[in-house]
Amino acid sequence: MEEIPVRFFVMAVLLCLSILFRPAIAAEQSIIVLDASGSMWGQIGGKTKMSIARETLHQVLQSMPADNPLGLMVYGHREKGSCSDIELAVPPGVGNADKIAAFVDGINPKGKTPLSAAVQQAAEALKYTEEKATVILVTDGLETCEADPCALASQLEKQGVDFTAHVVGFGLTPEEGKQVACLAENTGGKYFEAADAPQLVAALKETVIEAPRQASEEPQPVPEEQAVAPAFNVEPDAVLSEGGPSLGDNNDVQWKLFPAGADGQPAGDYVDLTYKAHYSVTIPPGKYIGEATLRSLIVQRVPFEVKEGEVAKPFVNFDAATVTLVPKRSADGEADSNAVIEMKFGPYTTTEYGQKTVYISAGTANIKATIGPSAIEETLTVKAGETLTKELIIGSGIIDNKAIYAEGGPDVESNDLFFEVLSATKSIDGSRKSFGYTYGNGTKLDVPTGEFILKATLGKASGETPFSIGAGERKDVLVNINGGVVAITAPNAYKVVVLEAKKDIQGNQKEITYSFDRQFQDTVPPGDYIVRVTYEGDVAPKEKPVTVKAGERAEVTVE
Image (tube, helix red, strand yellow):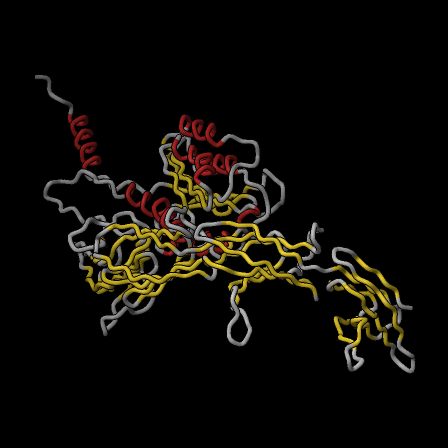
């Protein structure tokens, strides 16, 4: 057999060794493309989307490994109406967490949504045709600059060495999400629907931290005698019931890992925060307290210790059930989004709105459901791990309010028109119980089932209409306030008073309305009146009669 030259043998050995002992794959370069268009001033849960994005990025960047190469691209933050307002705010590199957080803190949303061009520029900044590259797009709106994100995705996938785009639809509807999800789908990425802050945190955790970590932790060939060090040293997990399945990627679960104090309680700030029941992370060796929170309410804590070369597995059982609460006005009606549901169980109290799927600790829960003035209270008993649906029949109807000045019209158009639902019967002192009120024609009121009176008042005129209503029923209720408008002009007046023209047996006239303005108007019942004008100084008052008819306007000038 022909002898192999020594130099080729040495080269072959070196090649094998280089494969056998090569280091783990470096973390891939990524760029976050952040929507800073004007729509980011919109609100979710009382907070602007921009504020939520800032807080979320701060949380995620705190737990990002320092060696993750990351950059930031922003669009729509400098000019209104510009499709070229795109800036590579922080070029991709390691140790960029503080720079990215600082830049995001100073963003003032203004402009349009050129998301396709921004993704393309991010890909080019990552040299996607030469190296592996990942773009994470966070957008609360659709493309507004006449570009096709789906076609762009196909182009980037075709031309890139290993290009991936993940898309986070922040506050987008499912239909809107479909229009940008193709950016992810056409490049092998993922689309995340984020309706609130926890879901945004979960999406960014998975794309900014977990994906690069998994790429960098791909198992590499090692000599048989070489021990494999764990790729992480903490693996939390959580279940709803004893022996039940892991809650896995469920982002209703939030884990916080705190250093443990001498008293066995959390000491100082948390070292990791993740919205997921089961995940992995690396933290320094030591003693810790794991705090798991289910749907921001049910809390469980567990102590654990991280040791060199070992994986700690903090585990909690929430001992809870999954309950879908369906509030209805009637047994055969649909779920009502106006319902307010208050729940008390164990040490917890929480409030939900409309139909919701919630977690309730095993045992009994007191539930109060209301729609306007209608309310029911029930006690619900649940077992850990079970899933059930509970209908809450509240017994409520809706009335649509309308008022007119006189029989046959016209409609009352003033925003000062006051509607109030009153009990049909009076109490012993002659008063009626109120069941809700509102202002303006064409409004609606939620009312319990039964007999009631709708009272409408404008100025000094008012009217009442009795009505009855059943569960789930909607009814138009019309009130005639039987009034007209008196409009007065009185130059140089100090005070203007409208009196009933008719005197009582003592010779007094009833005061109907007054003003210190020299021009004013009010709504009054039909009838004959006297307009009395008084002046400052030694000037005699003046009077003028006026007749007001229902549904008409009477103008009078007193000079």
